[in-house]
Image 1: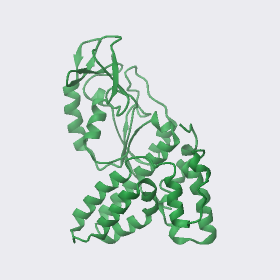
Image 2: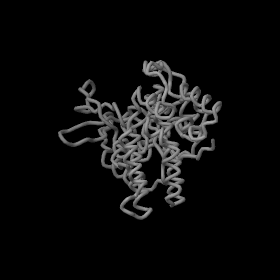
Image 3: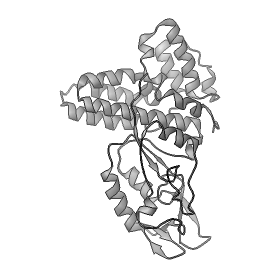
Image 4: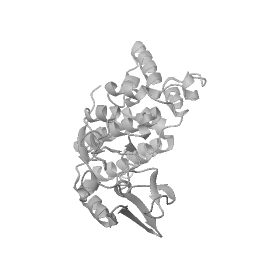
Length: 306
C-alpha cells in the first residue's frame, strides 16, 4: 500500500537541536523513526522568544485568572511574548497533519504541565498546559496531538500514527477537490472510522451523501471537521473487534484483544492474512489494516501495555 508523506510539527528539542534549557537534546526512537517518514516542521518556542540556550528554567504560573510564563531566577515574564509568537508562528505554518510535542514542557506541553501558584520554589502546582501547547489546541483544527512521553503507550502510538496518516490522505482528497475522491476516501476508511467512533462514522457518511446538494468546498470542510471528531479519542478495546465483526461476522467475542493483551496491529496483521488467503478485495482495500507505514509497526508493537 502506498502512503502519502504527512507534514508534522515537532518540538525542536526532540532530536533536532540542543535547545533544551540545559543545552541538551532529547533522543527518542519513535520521534526519530517518525521524522524519517514525514515532512518535518520544527521550532523551539522558548528560544524563539529570546530566552537563549542554555537558559534558566521557566515555569507556568497562575495569578488569579491570568496565566504567565516566568523565569524565576531573573524575574522575567515572557507570557505575552509567547502568546504573540504562538499566534504569528502557527498562522504561518503550511497545512499540517499532526503535532508531536515535548512532554510537560512549560511552552510546548499540552497535558500534565505543572502550573504553579507562585514562581517561588516549593509552591503548589496543578496540571495544565504550556502556552504554546495551549495555542495549538486553541486552533481547533482537530489534528492529532501527542507528546513523546505518552507515546510509550502502544495504544496511543497506534492512535496518533493512524490519525496523522489519515489526515495526510484527506489532504490528497482536498487537493483533488471531487466528490469521487471523497467517496473513495470514505469507502476505504469505513472500518477504520467504525473502530474509532461508530456515531461519527455514520455522520460522515451523511456528509458524503450530500442530500442538501452543497458545493464540494463546503462538503470537504464539513467532512474535515467531522473527521477530527471521529478520531479525537483512541478506540475502546472492544471497538476493533466490532469493526472486524462487521467485516467477517463470525469472530468470537473472546478474542484476546478484548483483554488488552496485544496491540491492534498484531490482530490486524492476522486478519489481513486471512483476507489475502480468501481474496477479500474489499477488506484488503480497507485502511484499517495498514493505516500507517509498516516500517513503524515494530515500534508500535513494543513498549508497555499501560
